[in-house]
Length: 181
Image (cartoon, rainbow, N blue to C red; front, side, top):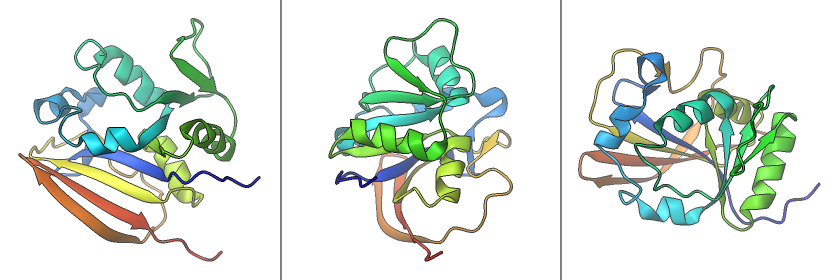
């Protein structure tokens, strides 16, 4: 299957300075102390769809009252068990990671597909499906929580191509170097 899309597959992460993407208990409220969708609006404008892990989706649902102003396009949640009560704003996928990326990428059209969630991102990185990694480094030390990369992820070489600061937030962007397998 050939993908004519011009958009990229981008792992999008907010990270504490000590390398955590969520705090203890998967808390993420610390993010909104430093960021809003207006911090880097060009990222939201370039995003056509999001592929999210089930855990990240559940955390996002709990936090939806706090911050609902991010619109990254169509939302796809990769899960082994779709919820009993469907969410009309989300498409739940139970397929493999390659098919999930292809489905969400098609929905993104010529915009980027944003990958959210530690496990889904690791699966995409492991299979060579990611073009870029975008990391927002926030001025906070969490001390514990969900690490940027889970244990067992093989080495992946990156090429930095951009860094921008907005207030206390630093956005780092990397191309993922593709290996010939």
